[in-house]
Image (tube, rainbow, N blue to C red; front, side, top):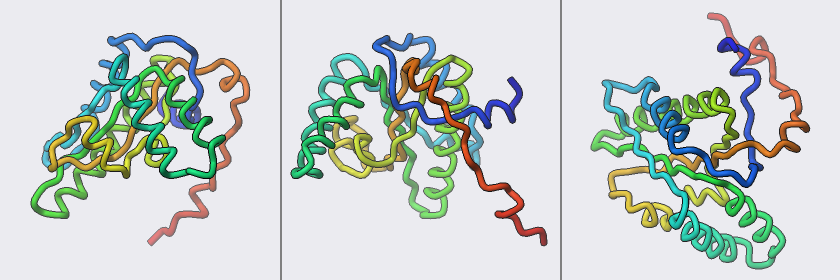
Length: 188
């Protein structure tokens, strides 16, 4: 598959088979992340792999968070926690915070590139992947920061959920509708 085919076929996979992801594949994703471009080779990323017993604890944390956030929507809480329980591995991804705000922003952009590199590598490894920045990812909730034991000089950029794609979801694959670049480009 060439790069354009890979980019065109990339999509968020939210439903997974009940099958563990091999450590070697997780390590390959992490390796792909470290190949991302980054300003001054600061390599500002950190990865916190959540699976096994830690995942069980995360499920409880997510459940408490969802109950607080949606106290009048038990069906939403139930469906959201089901997603967490059915996801074999999650990785919290952080960016280093530096004294200069501009350097910290550059770091965040690099970490976004690292996550995208992981996403493309996941396709090569026949894994489903989704990058979560809200909701069950708890990215904006300080409890996640404490849960992973990240120092204060780290900013949470996202949680990635990874697993072997549910066959039904793959069968229902839809073509992505994208605005042509010509409508979003100004030639100067």
